[in-house]
Length: 136
Image (cartoon, rainbow, N blue to C red; front, top):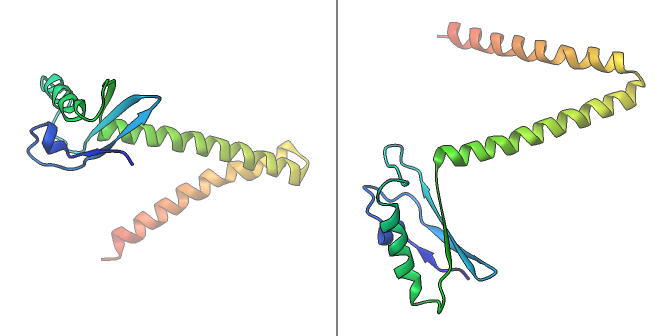
């Protein structure tokens, strides 16, 4: 459906990790180059040469090329995922709090039940860590 470009065709990397699809939305082509190598900086002086090679690859496929390249590395991808996880956890806690208020018909009992949970988690981590340290 969408054309696929291997990164080694448009840039000189020491190691090819991933090639991504080119997405087209409203006539705008979006190229996502994901750098999964720790020591390679995609947003370096080679950025414009990468862009020009990408444009050359797709100039013959479209009459009027409108490209919006998007460069990111592994840390930015992880930060996005962690942000999404944080939103999900916050929403989950609010829903759990609301459910407990509904079940107990009291804010006090709900706060008592929820305040015990962090202590249980800490004790569980300590117990598992001690067990792993002394089990040898």
